Image: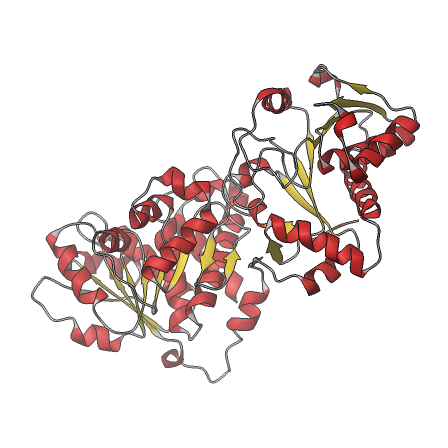
Length: 490
C-alpha cells in the first residue's frame, strides 16, 4: 500500500543491496517483493484513475520490466484492456523478471513490438528503465520516451521515471515526464532535487511491508526536512521571555539602488523571531528603512568609519543582500568577513568569496546554482548535473554549512545532507534569497546550531512560499512570504 513519504532517502546502490539483505533477513523471496511492487503500482493506478479502461505498459529488458509484467497481469485480471509494448526481446529477461513475463504469457497476455498510437490509452505505465541507469538513453528507448511525453496521456512511473539518474536526479539524455512516480522500498535521493522535480510528478511511496526493516539496517544518505524541525529546535517561548534572549542580527548590505534586498533580509529576521535587528547600509538608505519597517535599527556607514561597536553588539551577521560590487561594498565586506562570530553569507557576499576564497567553520553559505558555479569555478550545468556532489564540493572548499538553493534545496555540513521538499516555481523572483538569509540568521541568533538553523530556514521559507502561492504562483513576491513565516513559526 502507498504511504506518506519517508523522511530518509538513499543512494541507488544502497537500495539494491539493502533490498536483497532485508528480503533475506525477513525470509521473503525476491519475487515476492516484485509481486508486491506490481500490486502497489496497480493499486495506485486503480485509485487515481478509476475510470481508466485502456492501459499501455511499456517494458524494457530489466527488473523494472518485471514489475511492468506483474502490473499488466493484475490489470488484465481486473478486466482492463491491456497493451504491453516491449522494447527489446523479452526472451532476454532473466531471474524474477523472466518469471513475471512467463506469468503474463500464461494468463494469455501478449506483447506488441512497435509503437502503438498513444492517444488511444487512458494511462501509460513506464516500466522501461530502473535505478541502475548509468549512460545516456538513446535509440529505441529515447524514441519511446519521446512518444510517451508527446502523447499528453497520464504516466505512472515504476520506481523512477525512465531516463533519470537515481542518485543525482539529472536527465540521462531524455526522461519520462511522469504524472505520478511510485517509488518502492526506499526513497531514492535523485528523486528529491534538481531536474527530477520536473519529471517525477506526484511522488508516492510504497514500502512493500519491508521499509521499516530496511531503514533499521541501512544508514540513510540524507533526510527530508519536516515540521518537526521547528518543534525540536525552536521551542515555545516562556511567558517571562524578553527580547534579549532571542539574539541580535546585524544585516550588512544595500548599496545604492539595492536597499530593498537588505530590507527584505532584515524584515525576515524580525518576522521569524530575532530579538533585535540592525542594518548597516548606505547612509541615504536609513530613512527609507525605518519608514518601511520602524522596528529596525539602522546605521549608515562609509569607508573609514568604525564598525566595531555594531559588530560587538551582534549575535551574528547576515552579509551580502544588495551588497553590490563597488568600493563601498568591498570595504564593508572586508571588515565584516574578517570579524569574529557566526555569519550567513549570501548574494554579492558569495561572489566576493568566490574571488577571494577562504575557509571557515562558523558560517552558512547560501548560493543559488549561478553563485555555486562561481564558487567552484565551473558552469551552472555542471552544478545541476549532480547537486549533491556540488554542495559537497563547496563545503569541502569553503567549510561551514552550505545551502544549495533551487528545486529541492540541499543543506550540507560535511556530514549530513538535508533536502527541502517544499517550494514552487512562483518563488523564482527577486528577493526570495534575501528573505531566506534573514530567516537563517534569525534562527542562529536564537541559539539554533548552524546546520539545523539552515535546514529549518529552508523548510519554513519554502513552506511559506507554498502558502503564499495559494493566491497564485505567477506574480508571487518575496515580501508575500513575511506574514506566512510569522504564522508558520507561531
